[in-house]
Length: 197
Figure 1 (cartoon, rainbow, N blue to C red):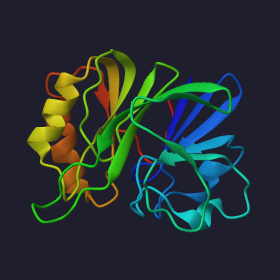
Figure 2 (figure 1 turned 90 degrees about the vertical axis):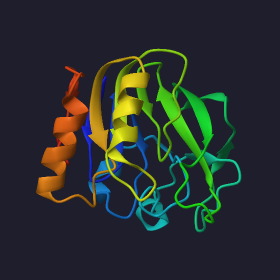
Figure 3 (figure 1 turned 180 degrees about the vertical axis):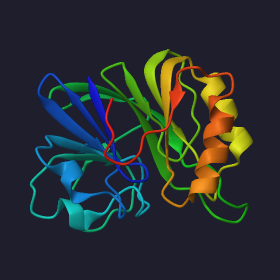
Figure 4 (figure 1 turned 135 degrees about the horizontal axis):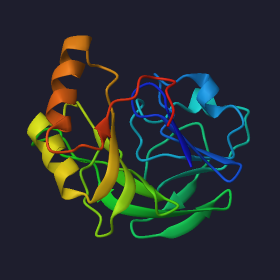
């Protein structure tokens, strides 16, 4: 399985000739969708879904039931659902976006475990029961403290992890947060946009 990190939370997963793209938001590079077979969207915020990137591509899109996403049709997914996206097994976990501020109502948010291997949590810190090979860890957000990201990385059983949700961090911030996330996690590493493993 090949993983390519794009800007912010956009990740391309390639397995057995199939390409899934998760969270192609407003900062994602359009080429992330080249040759794509299906798109998974964790939630409705524009840094995770940019309908203009999908326009005219005819791709099947999977997003949480109840998400307010204008301009594209999508297959509605509920928490706990298991489905196939372009033949790849996916399990939806979680259900609610991380709390932003006490009077801000949360939106729906699903994390996706792709092929029992890669876990993209979107904007939530839901800890699944099973171990995953690859964990994608949100690094910075209005709803997130660094200590929470560290706790999440330690709580989810995994072999390796990579930082995501980093589109608003300058280099000093990246250096600091990467240092913290790497403490106690020998499998952690940050991928620059376009880098693949």
